[in-house]
Length: 76
Image 1 (cartoon, rainbow, N blue to C red):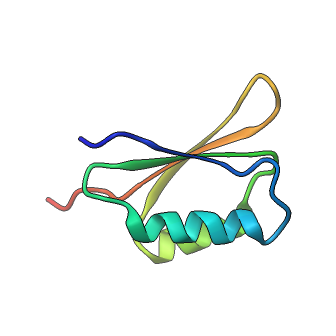
Image 2: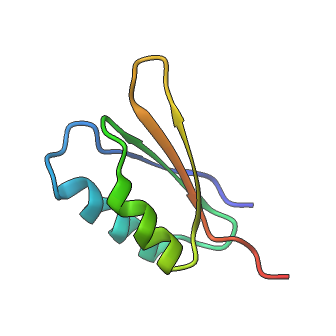
């Protein structure tokens, strides 16, 4: 399994966080995940991930930020 690609977009203004993660998705290698740190929950991103076959989990940090883990599920 590859290492996580950390994408901290907390200081970016919309639509830059979405643009950054979409660009990162294009470079995602097999077994690699994106760990996105965002100050808002990116609801529009979830529909894009589902449409394109990515899985994700979202958690809230102690600081109140959102951490979204994104990966491409392995096919059976």
